[in-house]
Length: 255
Ligand code: G
Ligand code: G
Ligand code: G
Ligand code: MN
Ligand code: NA
Image (tube, rainbow, N blue to C red; front, side, top):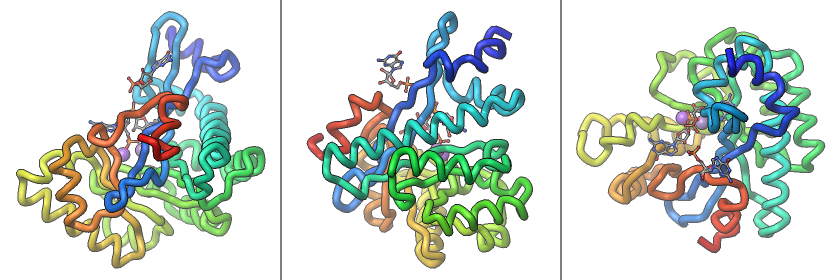
């Protein structure tokens, strides 16, 4: 209840902020992008994580305001970093909830964030879970096609953790697979996990999709992923989610 009454005001009151976690090219070590992760600094409860307030925001419809704010802020910050570092290819991954994606204004919100920030559409990637993609599949496919025509990327978040079939995957105009961290955790000790990750990477390549391994926590995992020809990695072994100012040296390539 404490949360509900305040959530609506959180955007206006400047209580939300974004952390950014680098996504690194496994072969060169270069930072290709960051993932924007929202946080809520509640006046009484302190730091509230998205797992706790996003479901509530979806129920009450505030997710649309929050989502618009996240999109705009992430695009503006990324454009700022591009100018600051001269790295014009730096991209940002933004999480989008199913409810937000279904809204008739969603594509308009994306266009507005790109216009306001002057970020090239190819530098924005939207993350959706398999589960949210398969909700209302026909309208999801239409929205995805529209976004692809704009030049925006679409990443399948938590890939492998849902119950989507290859039948559906084949129809989705996705551009990137983010391998769920559950498969990465025991990568170098569990033969089944290694076989699955290897197959995901191979299938991704066959479908023209790049792969990002999530939740990479050790150098051993990173080495194994490099051998398996995974494209990108993200996780504590490389860098935790950081405040924008803390992330700047990473995107500038000086750390
Ligand atoms: O960063 P953290 O582990 O707390 O994130 C927890 C979950 O919250 C993740 O599943 C992530 O996808 C989700 N999340 C983080 N930021 C956003 C956001 O801006 N919008 C939505 N819809 N989900 C987010
Ligand atoms: O569902 P999604 O992939 O959007 O969630 C991303 C979440 O994963 C973020 O909340 C982030 O804090 C968390 N995360 C990032 N790197 C690691 C890691 O190496 N290990 C674990 N366990 N979580 C991570
Ligand atoms: O615990 P979590 O992964 O959400 O923290 C991500 C980053 O956000 C950490 O670097 C943490 O120090 C930072 N952070 C969280 N809350 C605040 C805050 O209120 N102010 C500042 N400056 N940093 C914060
Ligand atoms: Mn994500
Ligand atoms: Na994920």
